[in-house]
View 1 (tube, rainbow, N blue to C red):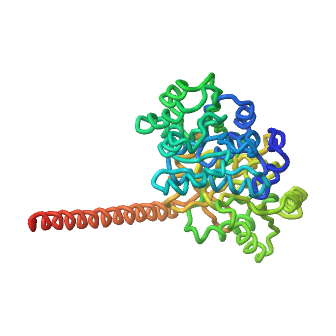
View 2: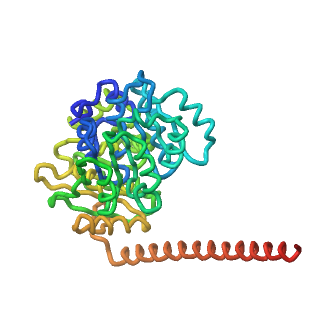
View 3: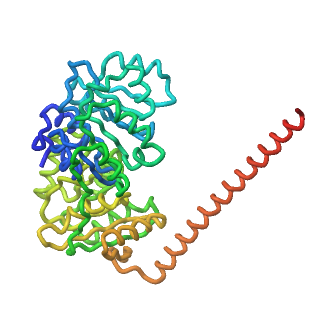
Length: 424
């Protein structure tokens, strides 16, 4: 499944590829066709799973910039998220050659400058509900021409602190305006609140988190700087035929590949900025055995389909369970045995415990011993426990120092205020 099969144009799909985005995520695959049909949607998906593009892509496909009217409004609970959405819109428009433009409209910023931006009649307006409602009342935003309203992070936008302002915006729109709400967590209260202004919404829930039983899950506790050494030991000692290594930051892929090449390891990387042909050549080389190690980030975790991947190695632990699921799914295909090794710092062991609860499976602590992945010794367990205890103590000490500093500042402020009052 690719974006073209979801109804996204060739130009926009090519624009996504320039960002290193080749395959739709679960939420994008499920949401895009329904949103493009004009239906109301309530969608739930993990943070970082691609919700922004899940609604931006249909907007790009349906708005008509030549009309010079407001056709889509995107409400966000924070200025930071509004800026993030606006930046993604700009990047997508630039990479795809699209004429779609947006206006960032947030409270606390200069309203006159925002009004000047709105004079260009951008088809998309992004921002806070309060400021957008204010500009609608001033007739600077044309509410009656809006075809789609998106409410991002809906659990916040529809809570008791924000629902009144959100509804103020909704009341200015035409009754048949499409409403799309998305959030990482959508409880019963959010759904009930949303249904008051939605017409038979389609509910899209987050992806089921399931991992095949034929995969072994190991973790090795080590300092961050030792991660690449452990990786090289695994490659030398276990001698796997095909290995996919995952790291969190795409801009570090090239650096890691160069370090591994220095040790004569046949490796290739899937870069976010790589051309489509370069990505294909690297994947072909891995599939055909011309390279043994493939380095990728979570951008590449989906859509990678290879036979006989022996090991998946997480040199960086993923922050979300859904990412661990997709990484692990690159091995153990077609009922074959697979192994996932996560190299974690003492602080990151908590993520392993979280994954155990989410997936209801056992992660086994291991260590490198005489070049092999081996059961961790009692001595090493004791060392790791000591490191975790020391880490917790340092964290608590920082909290205590921070608290004491705050107390000093508060006392100083109190005496200063009282001193000023006494002078008067």
